[in-house]
Length: 413
Image (cartoon, rainbow, N blue to C red; front, side, top):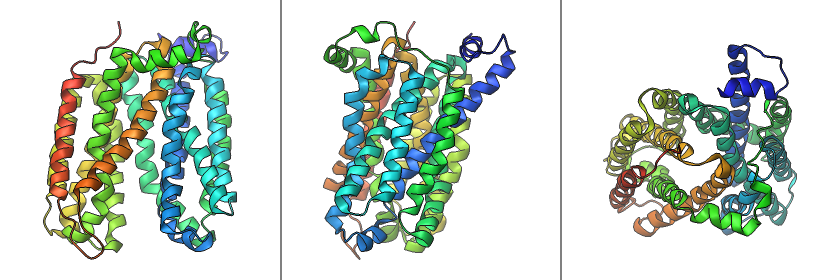
C-alpha cells in the first residue's frame, strides 16, 4: 500500500516492493542515527560537568542551568512549532530542523563562556525537541499499521545505543581532547546523515488544509482536541512515573544498595545492552499481537520493577545490575507500545502538530517527575537516601493508572 507510493515519490519507475521496503528501512535507520546524535548531545553534557566547571569557571548553579536549558527550550519549541509542522513538506521541515540541531551542537563546542554555552544549549534543545516529534510523525506516515510497531522500536533504539556506545565514547573523547571534542564530532557525524535523509526521504506533503488555518486556531485545536488530551495525559503519567525514580537511581545505588561509584557505568551499560535487544523485539511483538495487550504487560512489568528497585537492600552490583536493566527495558518497551497506540489514534491531518506538542508534554512531564521525586526523598552526601521506597510506590501508582487512559484511546478509522 504505502511502499509503492514511497517508491513513486522518490522518482523510481515501478520498482519491486522488496526494493521499496529496503529503501524505507534505510530511511528509518537514517532517522534513528540522527535521533542518536540528539540523544548523545543531550546526555553527554552531564558527565562532562567537571571539565566545564574548571574550563569555563562555571559553578554548580550555573551548570544546572546548562543542563536544564536544553529541556526547557525543547518543551517551549515543541508548542511553538506545532502548527508549522502541518503546513509544508515533512521532508523539507525535517532537513531544516536536523541542520539546526547540528548547528547548535557545533555551537556548543565553540562556546567559550557560560552565556554562549547557554545560548547554544537552547538552540540544540529547541531543534532536538522538534526533531523527535517530527521523526515519529514521519515513521507513522511511511510505515503501515502492520509494520509500525517494529519501525517505532527501531527508532527508539537510538536511546539505548546512545547510552551504551555514544556517551562512553563521548566521555573518552572529551577526556582526551577536551569537553568541546564530542560536540564537534557529533556535528561532523551528522552532516552526511542529513545528506542521506535529503536523498532517501519522500516528500511526504503536509495536509492540504494545513496552510489555510490560522496559527493560533490550529494550535488550540491540536491542544484541546479530546482524543489528543487523552494521549497527552497518558504520556504525562508515564513520564512522571518514570522520572520521579530515574534521577535518583545512581544516588540510591551508591548510598543504599552498596554499588560503588566505579561500578555505576557497568550497571547502566548492562541496562542499555538489554534495552538495545528488547526494544526492537517489543516493536515486532506489537505488530504481531497488538499494542493494547502488550502495553498492559509492559506497564505492569515497569511498575513492578520500580517497586523492586526502590526497595532494594544492600545487595551490591550483582543484585542491582539486573534490576536496573529490567527497569530500563520495561520502560523502553512501555514507550514503544504507548506510541504505537497513540500514533494510530491521530489523524494524518494533525499528526505533525500533535507529535510536536506531545514532545513538549514529555519534556515538561520529565521535569515534573524529577521535582516530585525531589520533594519526597531526603539525604545528602554520605547519607542513605531516605523515602526512596515511597517514591517507588507513587511512581508505580502513576504508571498503573495509565492503563485507564490507554483503554480510552481509539485508533482512527
